[in-house]
Structures are given as structure tokens and as C-alpha cells.
Image (cartoon, rainbow, N blue to C red):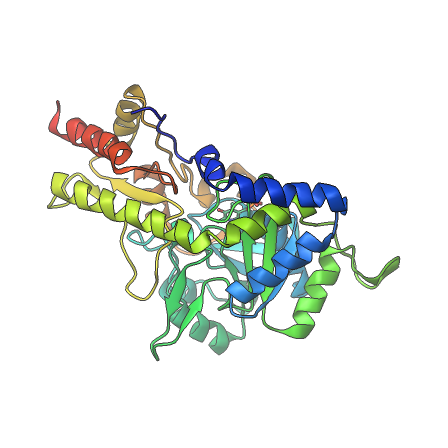
Length: 382
Ligand SMILES: *Cc1c(COP(=O)(O)O)cnc(C)c1O
């Protein structure tokens, strides 16, 4: 094999669309409208079309997207926001940053996502919003979450940083893309995300015209017209070069999701043969009513062998990653700030057992064979 096995292969992906990308960047250089140039509006509009016509407000990164969403909803210190205990820090960090109270709930150890049942137990009279995170590329079971939110008058802010392109099917048969189901959707264009730029970027989605206007205003220093500031905002922009890159890559997003699905199917087929009874590891569980865009292909390694397997793979030159090694309830930063609803034992168990394998759009079966052969050798003691 001539190529190094990597968790992600941004270079290989770039080389396949080099001409398109280079031309798009050259065009921005030619225009020299580096901030809020035509490329930003073009990307905003094409992403909106991709998502079925929802408002898209580009911003500087996925963390800002979540923060701006919370700001736009007018939440006040003391308000509680429900967030999974097993997620990337951003989802909870922004809650605390705004003086709101993160209320951590447990996840389903099979899908890694929160369910309406997890959330229901955490609701108090102070609860104002829920941040479901579509972790690793698969939707949370959103229909019951939305019903619960309606029942209690709660906002739903979808953290869609890992699942752009995934679709959720409602019981009446209609489907909606993740990020367009809740009150607001947030995403990140960090390079390794499914739709990644070559730097930082993010976006906020919402259906409501007035809320979209408010979000756009907050992302732009709280101003509607230049130098007239109606609310306290922030400076969060997607720059034109990144937008031009994203505009090209968006055209390939569905093809990228297909490539990830192909790779996931191949892993699953091979790994199932290695451990047909599920004694050694658990394969990624599928929610029946969501497509999966495999931001990560994540196993749960049983029998306390996760760290040993990771070391074994590393010794064979095979990268793997632990997303995430500490659940929120064990993060020092949240001590005394976040409230735990329940024992959060599944979140802890996930942190102790998860292992993500190399997953990207450029994986070949030959590369995957190397990964799965090494996993087989580890468990058969060869
Ligand atoms: C990447 C990510 C974010 C943050 O995005 P940035 O662009 O890095 O700020 C938020 N939530 C989740 C679940 C993520 O994976």
C-alpha cells in the first residue's frame, strides 16, 4: 500500500477536486472581497437550497453558531439548557459561557445520542432549551424530542456539527434533514467535519424569518445598519475564501456521504465476521428512522480492552481515536456549574469503551482490511 493510513485524508480529498477548488480560491483573490464577498452569499444560498430552503446564516465556527443561537433566543442567567453528557465540549461550553445552567443528561449507549426519555427526567420549571447532538453522523430520535419540547414550551437547538446531510424520517413518512428540525440548527465546517473548509467556519439554520434576522444581526455586532447597534452581538463571520471552498465541496457532499457509507458497510461486514456474537465489541447501532453520514465509525470495545487495542493498533501504524475520553460530568471546567440529571452512567461507560476507526472519503477496502485484520489479530491473540 502506497498511502499512509490516516483518521482523515484531507489532502487526498483535495487532490481529487483540486482544479475546482483552486479556481474558486483564485476567483476570491481576483475579487479581493475577503469579508462578506459574493462567495459568502453564494454559499449561503446553495446551502439553503440543499437544506430545503431554510434560512442559513454563516458564521465563524460551530461553537459560535451554538452561542449565537442561544443569544438569539433571549435566554437569561438561571435558565437551564439540557445537553448530553457525552458530546464535544462546545455543546455545553456555550451554555455556561452565557451564564445559563447546563443540565447534563445521559445518552443511549447504543446510538450515543440522547432520547426523549433521557431529556424528560431532566426538565424543571427553569428549563428553556434542549441541545440534542447528532453524534458521529446519525440523527437523534427527533420526533419524540420535538413532541416533548412542544409539550413543555422548550426551544430545540440541534448541534448538527457531525451530521450535515443526514435525514430523519417522521412517523408520517416525511423526512427532514438534521439541523432543520428544531427551532435552530448549528453546524461546523472545521476541516475534518463531513463538509469541511480549509480553516474555521460554521453556520446557523432556522425557519423563522424574525429569528433568522435576529441571528444574522447578533453575528454582526448586533447591527442591522452599519454603526447602529440594536443589541449586544459578536463578530462571527465566515470569510470569503472558506465560503468559496465550501461552495465547491457542497456539490460533493452527498457523494462524500455515500463514500463514508460504503466504508462503514465494509467495516461492519468484516468486523461482524470477526466477532459474530458481539463478545469483543459492539458495532455502531443504527436508528431505524435516520440515515447515517458516518462522521465517525465508532465501536464500543468490551472487556476493558479498549486502551490495549488502541495501543496494539498504534504499534501496527494504525491510527484510532477516543471521542470522547471524559464525559462532561467529569470535566473540571463544569464542576459546580453544570447539573447532572441522573447517574450519567451510560455516558461514562461510552467514554471508557469507545474507539473510532479511520473514516473518511478516501478509504480503500485495502486500507480497511489492514485495520480489521489487526483488530482480528488482537482478539485472537496472534
Ligand atoms: C466540531 C463540533 C463543534 C464545534 O465546532 P467548531 O467549528 O470546532 O467550533 C460543536 N459540536 C460538535 C458536536 C462538534 O463535533
